[in-house]
Structures are given as structure tokens and as C-alpha cells.
Image (tube, one colour):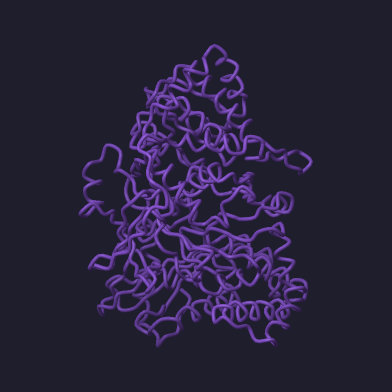
Length: 608
């Protein structure tokens, strides 16, 4: 097996826990802004690290006065906000354990998280959250305390904690050691019932310390970020903890429709996002240019930007290309930079491949997107690209303190400071997930000569055609999904004579595209799915993806579904990953029709 080990940059402390990151930050920069709160007039109000600590201790006292004991589990269902992280640290300071719940979770999911974890308290934010909780309240008898954020219950907790001493909070804060449980985060549940991932304090504490030293250009006390990804997901949760350790100023904007205005006023230096966000920014800019009659110059700027970025990799940019890029950058690209606040230099991207084209485009824009790789079971990042040695299309080397190897069947396996302890009350699943002490990620990948990882597919999702050809769906799905009118792509063909695909339309981008292409912008998704121009556009995206693979791997047929796949429909996880098994079952008739209606065409897709 090929194996790469990256030694830790700091010596592990067996007595430390995640709260020490805040204590150390306050000692280092007590008066520096650690957060900024959005104001009604669009401005931002700073919160210093010492003020945040004061609020954390006050809320922790309230939790203690309300009967929370060390080791108790508190469930939290709320959108991304300052209060989310305040509750997170207050829970730790009280000696308790947080169990995050996605704010989109259905009542049955909430019941499972609460009952399986043994949570004794529930914090929700909105009446809608509480309506869903109320549906299953009688079925979770262990819950004895319920608080609602937007009813002012956090302030009430603080008011009730006046009698709890600082000494008691300090005693509780320091009870947990490195190996003790810090949080239970439930997996998305793409297959089967969600499992509770046991992350200990060392996972957060040691990973934060090593990440800060690994990417100091990104994480430092002069940087800032605007979080909009849900904090219930380990990706944003870890970044919020890392930001406290690194002194990064954090703002929050859970409403993605308000993201662009917030970027303009907050002006972050780095972003945390999934590839779909970068695709949306690009597609929106493209369609806006098309609508304004500037599509030709936009595409010229994009082509030049990609050429420029590729030239950077060679170490020499020809003078003519430099001059051409400078002109188009001023006319087109600078406007996209300004829309993101003007100060963004880095972004950390995960959950899916970004694609070479967008990677080069954004780097030319002045935004280096550092792709990383990880799972809930690895506290988010187990690898991340390095600004000092950045490789587009790779997810980077292992984060210091971690090791990676590729098994004989191509599976990526990991161990180190990122890796979890096991699944909550599920010894069988835990045993199945490890091999000789290495966590089996379920992803297939390979290393380059520098130990940079490339993820090539999901082990359980590899399609084997009737002809015996192994096909990774992601290699086809990701480039097609980058098209502005495409929502989701599900490549199928296991034990079938050829590869096909189910495709949905992006209902946000569709009206703009229809208008730009001389079609009725009010067409419904179902109507657009039958529109010849829409079918031709999807065909173009499929053909482009097919050009990157062999004929045996290419998509011969596709069907445009007349409705989108959503979390509400049960087809997407909270982080918007597709539930492949559910989709294959629910749309089995559509899939079979692509194989039963007619034989495969010679490399030409046919809309179903």
C-alpha cells in the first residue's frame, strides 16, 4: 500500500480540551474583534474575544443553574449565527456535550437524534423548529428542558445564572480531557439510519492547532470570514472553532439570498463554501453578462483567465497574454471580485470536486480555492491544499498530524488527529469502518508524487456495466452539474448495457437562461424539460462531459426529470448530497424506460 504520513507541527496535549482554544485566544488578543454582528443598517458591530468569553461564561452559568450536569447532551437546532457558536462554547464550558441538528430535519429525524444520543435538553430557534419538535416531544421522555432562541430564552438563562460562581464554571470547563467526548454529530444518512459520530476534544483542539500552522496565509489574526454554510455540519463547525484559535473575525449570513450584499459590507479575506456556490457565482455572472449583451466579452475574459492561470503553473506568462488579461480583468473580472467584497484572497472548498476550469478561473480572479477533503468522521479536513504549494484539481496532502494510504482496492484510508473514535452505541458499524486502525473512508483515490490526494469516486457508487466497465459517476456528474441550467445529475447503468443519466433543472437559473435564449421565462420546470432549446443545452453539457471519458463510459441517454430533487422530497441530504439509493428506487421507471424503449445510440444522447 502507498502511504503518506505528515507529522504533527505541535506536540499533542493530553490534558487540553476545545475550550482552551478560547482561553488562549483571549490571553493573546483580548481586545481584538473575534466576531462581527450584522446591524439593521447593514453595518457590522464587533465583538472582542474577551467579550465573547464573558458571554460564554454567563450563558454557561445559566445552563448550570437550569440543571445541566457535566456529560449531559444538549441538542441544538438553529441556523448559522453568532448565537450558534455562543451556545456551542457555553455548552463546553458547562461540561456538557452538544448534539447539532440540521434546521431542515424532519420530525422523525429529530426524534432519532434525540433518542439515540440520550439528549436531555433541546434548544431551537424558530416557531417552525418547535412545531417539528412538538410533533415528537412525547416520544422523547428524556428531554426535560426546552428553550427557544427567538423568544429570548438565552437571555433568560443568563439572568438565571447569577448565583453560579466563576470557580464552578472553571471546574466544569476543565473536566474534559483530550480523549473525552466533545460532540455527537449525526451523519447525513445517504444510506440507512444516521449514525452518531463520536468526536473528542482532541479532534478539535489538535486539528485546529495543526491547521493554523499549515495554512497561516489563510488563518491569522488579520483575516476574516463570512460563514453561511450550516454550523450543524462539521465543515463549518470546525472552521468556527479554528477561527477562534487563529483570531479570525467571523460574521454570519444564513440567508444565501442576502449573501452578496453581506459580502459587500463585511469584506471577508477568505470564504468557506462547497463547489456548487462557486458554480452559482460563475453562472450568475455569465447569465447577467448575456442579459446585458456582454456575453462575448465575458467568455473572452473567462478563456483568457484560464489561459493565464495555466501559464502561471508553467512559471512564465507571455507578455501578450499578460496585457490581454490585464484589459479583460479591468473590464470584467474586477466586477466579480468586487461582488465578493473585494478582499477575498482564499476560499476553502469541500464536499465535491471543484473542477479544473473553475479552479483556474477563480485563481486568475485572485481567489485561490484550496480544495480539501474529509468527512464527518474526520472532523472535516483530513487533507487540504497549501497556499505555498497549490495544485488545482488535487485536494492536497494530509493535514499535519494525519496519515493517508490507498488500500489494494483503491480506497482512501486515514488515521491521525482528525479521525473519530467510532460510532455512538454502534460497535458493529465502528468495527466495519476500521482496518488495522485505519479509517475506511469509502472513497476511491490516488496520490501524485508529492503525496497530494485526488479523489476519483465513491467506492460504493462505482458503476459496473453489463460489459464489465467500471465507471465513476462523479467524473461525469460534476462537469454536467456546472452547466447553469442543470440542478442535479445522477449517472446510472449498473449491470446495464450502457451509461445513462437522470438530470434535473436548476429552477433559480432557468428563468434567466430562458430569457437570455429567447424563450418564455415563465415556463415551469416540467414545461422547460420538454423545451427543444433546453434539451439541446443539456445535450451540450452531456457531450462536453462525454468528451472527457472513453466511449464505454459515456452517457448514451438522459432523461430530464419534470421536478427537482430536494431535501424535502427525501432525495438530498442536508448538505445537498444526492441520496443515490433513494433516487434509483423512486425513479426506477424513468431509468428502465431509457433501456427498454430502444437500443443504445452510437454515442448520441437522447432526451427521454
